[in-house]
Length: 193
Image (cartoon, rainbow, N blue to C red; front, side, top):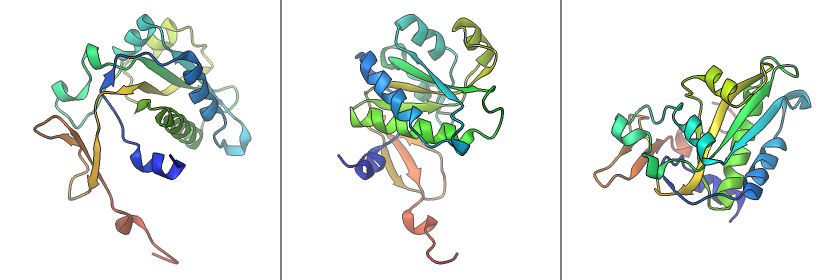
């Protein structure tokens, strides 16, 4: 599948099959993140892979999911929870601020590398207690936990649809997730606004 096709196929997934992802695959995803563009090539990002059940469950319990959905439709149940996480850390000794573009580029690279292997992702910034997670995982003080990727083989197939008024994603009567997206015509300007 071409990179463009992967980009068009990519949707946030919040329901996962309970099938493990190999550590080699997870390392490959991180390598894709490591190779992302970085402002001034400072490369302040570091990554922590969690694939052991206890660590994954610990972090899972400290995340918020799908703010637009009712609580019973947002956060996955234990039998559809992610099987791995990649934590995106910022080494503040290298760059203390202005690293948001680096995080975005690295996250998208990892998401696309995962999708190429059939692994789905949910990029999460809504973390309940970063300090608690940092302490539990012995993340040094000079590293901030920016966000994380929840990963697993998909147990749902969200669909993108043209934005028609509301940006809020929703589940239909069958439980399928619908994600409104602005159309190309509504965002594209050529040679001026």
